[in-house]
Every structure is written in structure tokens, then in C-alpha cells.
Length: 299
Length: 318
Image 1: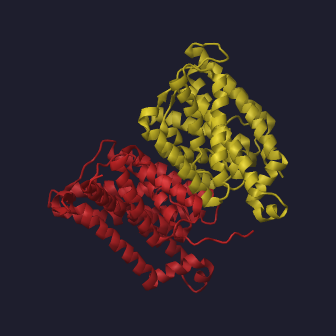
Image 2: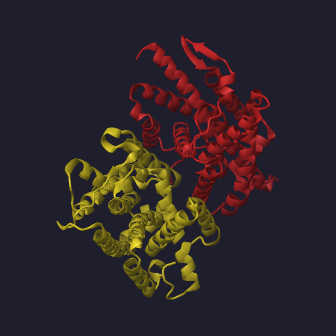
Image 3: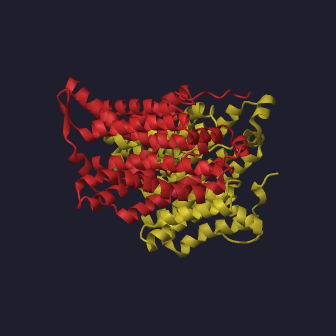
């Protein structure tokens, strides 16, 4: 493997890892607080992408630069509206019920969203590459790459990581979320509205999935099934890192992103295999994930 | 205590008769009923694990293993016999189940589900990407097999397959019921209610769960063989995570407390899909999703639960 290809693989891996991180950190956050694995998370990613493309294509007629705010608007819109409705009306009634029922509710939402997506946006690929074209290309060690992918995406991911860290560790709202996660009853007893915390957390997590999708939309064609693949991939990252681990998700996303990028250049047919193989191997050795703290077995 | 044997025999008898006779009146239903029964067999496996409180979100790997056992035989060995397929498919799935099971039975709840998912996605990506051997996403066509050396026309074969499947359903349902009523089955349920106490009694919970897991893998493989033969194709989608989700869905839809729930759930699932695909131009997923939410919200014991509450003695298949 010559050095140009190695650089190319690193850049590919970096931009891909940034997207995967955004989605999986949302999944991880929701699991950490609500104890629910959201199967519809990939659909939120897909809706973020499609909504961003739809808004972007509409505002691009006014000015192509408006496609950038469109990305953000789309993700917040999807996260707050769809995420909010989902938590309030579908998840809230099943808290405390059997785990399998909670999981299946989100599976049902996945089926509904997947179907609606085909009905709304059709099955033809949609392209909305304006934001990528507007930013110049950069040359990294002799390799040309879009600055959207190698600068903007990693920056957004980094900002999200630092922002989440700051929010959870250094603000009152973050402390409230941590309190509810730690001990819901005690938190409620001191006057914290746990239901509101769940709702807001779910909206944040859903927005992160949608943001991942919105940011991915200019770099790829939007096709049915994009969310179906993303959900298992973000599962793989979140589970490998340890569910609920935010910094861990970043490290794992980077590792899986790079591993996948290199394998594409070495042995392309194993591209899809890599994340799952890593997940199996890690979970076999450390079931709580790389960064998860292990729970002592009762017996 | 067993809620499982409380579905009236007359209802079971009616359902069996309906499955046997309806396709005679409506030939186009023969394959549909076969698919319902075959999926019900897979769901029986999910129900076994649910008894222990564990949800496998990767059971499609055994379904896929059974289907691809048939497909690979056709591609690399040549013409085959259904009787042979019904042996090698489930055995392959069982062997895979024993191997994967050795690892996954160490974990519970979300970790059990996740690890199953991971293993099934490994199988899926191999089936999808090793294009050279598997034809990738196109899948492998499965030729109509003989049965004990006898060849059939397509019209006759669909009935042969239907009645064979129906016979297998009766056999495995009886077997699963016996298993769940046996000490092994009771210990399996104890994993859900109180695993610690089970271990204090000197029983290895892992071993108990492994037995259940291997049996459920066997059932997954059996269903896979039947579906691959009925649909005459095996594709990587058979092992994809949405398929696993579908099986869990059917188990909850029908009611996980009862073997009959597997078939009631499969009947409703396939029927809604069949009708909606024909009438509502691809809105079947939407409709099934809404049905699932309604069932979970208002009838957590599934269709069989509804049926038992109302105590309708002779309501035919829902």
C-alpha cells in the first residue's frame, strides 16, 4: 500500500467516523438515560438527510449558501418534532414494561418511518451536493479532498463531543440529567421532573442522529435503506464503546471508521464485515464494551 | 401454572383444519399458508428464549443458515431431496447455534440481544459480500427438490410442501410443548424469574439456556429450509437484522406465552402483508407497525392473550 492510498484511507476514515460518531453518540445518550435501545435511530438519521436535502434544494434557489443553515434546521426539526412525538406518545406509556416491549415499540416506529420515507421521498436516489461544492478542496500530503469532509465534519463531531461533555458535566441541566440517570426516585423527590428530562434527552439524541444524516446528505446519494444500515452500524459503535459512553463512542467511531476505510482499499468485500467483527470480538472479551464499567455479577 | 396449554383444543383443531383445507379451496393460498407455518416454526424458537426472558435480535442467522444450506447444496452438489434438506439445514443451524450459543449464553438482556445481533450481521455481510460464492444480494435460486426420490409438478408440489410443513408444525409444536413442560423447560423459565436461586440449587443457568438456544436454532434452520424451498430462493436478507426483528415482532404479536401464539402471530403478520401489498401498494410495513404499537399498548399478552381473556371457545384462527 503506497502512502497516497494510506492518506486517502485516513481521510475517508476520518470523515466517515465523524458521521458515525454523531449518530452513535445520540443512541448512546438515549440508552444511558432512558435505558432504551432505539431501533428507529437509523430512521431519524435518514429523515435528517432527506429533510436537509428537501429544504436545501428549496432554499438553494435563493442562495446556495443557505443550504448550510438548512442542514442545522433540518436536524433540529426532525429531532424535536419526530423525536418529541415518539417519546411523549409511544415510549412514555411503556416505561417500566418489559424490555422486549420497549424495544419492539421502537421497531414498530422503524417500520412505520421506513415505509413513510418511501411514500414521501420515493425510491429514486436524491442528490443534494451543494454544501460540498461550495467549500474549496484541500490538499493533504498531496491528496486532494473536499474540505467539507475532512475539515467541517470532524470539526462538527469534535464540537459535539466537547459540547456534550460540557453540557453534562458543567451545567445545571446536565447535572439534572445525570441525577435522573443515577437515581430517578431520589431525583424526583427533590423536585426534578424526570419525564421532562427523558423527553429532552430523547430530543437531543434524536437531533444528533438527524444531524448525522443531514451532514451526510451532501456527500452521498439518498436511497431507501440508508437508515437501515446506519442503525446497526451505530449499534456496533455504541455497544463496542460501551452503551452510555460518550468519549468512548468517539474513540470507537474513529477506530471503526479507520479500520473500515483501510479495508476498503485492501479487501473491499470485507468492508461491511469489519464493524460487526470488531463488535463481536470486543463484546466477547468485554461484554460491557471497551469503556463500559463492568457490573459485578450477583452470584 | 402453565398458561401454555390453556388454548382450547377445539381452537387448535379448527386452526389446523383451516390450514389444511383452505388452500384446497383457494390454490393461490397454498404457498401463503406454507410460509405462515414455516415462519411460525422459527418464532417458536424465539418463544423458547422469551421463556427465559431473553430476546435474540439475531435469530435470522439460523433462518439464513437453514436456507443457505439448501441453496449451497443446489449450487455446489446438484439436485437434492427435500428429506435430505430437512436434515442438513436444521443440523447446520444447530451446529451454528451450539457454537454461537457457547458465547452468548454468558450474557443477559441487552448484551444477549446485542451479541446475537452482531453475530447475525457478520453472517449477513459474508453472504452479501462474498459474491463469488453466494451471488451477493441477488441470492441463490433454489430448484424444486424431489421428496424421497419422487418428482412433482409445481401445482402438486405446493400441496406436498404444505402438508409436509403442517405435519412438521404438529410434530415440533408437540415437542416444544413437551420440552417446556419438562424440568428443563421449567428451569429455563426460572432464568427469567430468579436466576440466582436457580444457581443456588446447583443448576448451571448457562447450560440450561444453551439447551434452549440450540433447540431454537434448530427451529430457525428448519423454518429457513421450508421458506427457501417454498419461495425457491435464498437471499442475504434472510439473515438481515430486520428479519430478526420480524420474528420477535411475530412472537409478541401472537403472544409469547404460548406455542399457538407463534402461528397465530405469523398468520396475522403474513396475511396483513399479503393483503396490504395487494391492495395498498406497499403500505404493509406501515400497517403492521401500527398493529404492533396497538398490540403492545393495549394487549401486551398478544392475540392469544386477547383470545383467552374473552374465552371464546371456538373462535377460529384470528
